[in-house]
Image 1 (cartoon, rainbow, N blue to C red):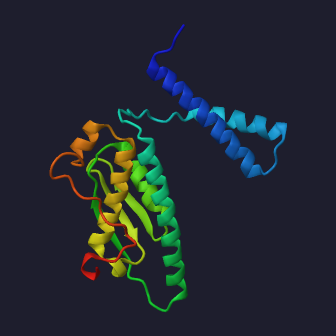
Image 2 (image 1 turned 120 degrees about the horizontal axis):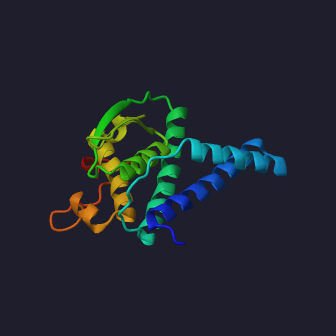
Image 3 (image 1 turned 180 degrees about the horizontal axis):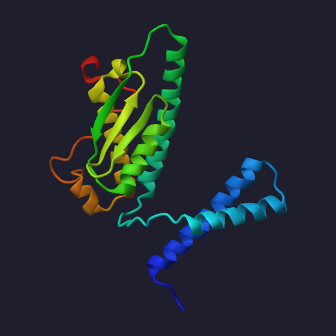
Length: 198
């Protein structure tokens, strides 16, 4: 008896979720024992079966090279942003914070969520609201005076672009305006000086 591919995918996701939640449970307790592992599995099963996640239709195309580029760029952004936040904390200048509105190119829940998570992982930026219907992120920027609002907006769009190139299908890339003539250039990093300073 073979399962429908969609049901098979849901089953694989549930198994992975149970294993991951069990590992988190054991990690939180800090002791690897049969009782902790068993308790973790039972709690993970209750969570997965009792609080099912809504299914997300994924019709994209995984590009391993682009995924590595996304991960590598995230590491660079984490290091650079952490240094900048530390210098800001040690310095005398008071940062000028702001909440900026960033309309994303894609309206997919999956890509919106991934973009929001990656933006929030980088020190100095936090997504305070995500408007699902319009595909808009509202991002709190710790020090907007250093680079400017437009530069920060382009930085968020650059993260979304890397997510789309790593995971989206060609149709999704086309709908986002990232392929074909007139496609935008890759937006600048938030850690580069603004255009007028170059």
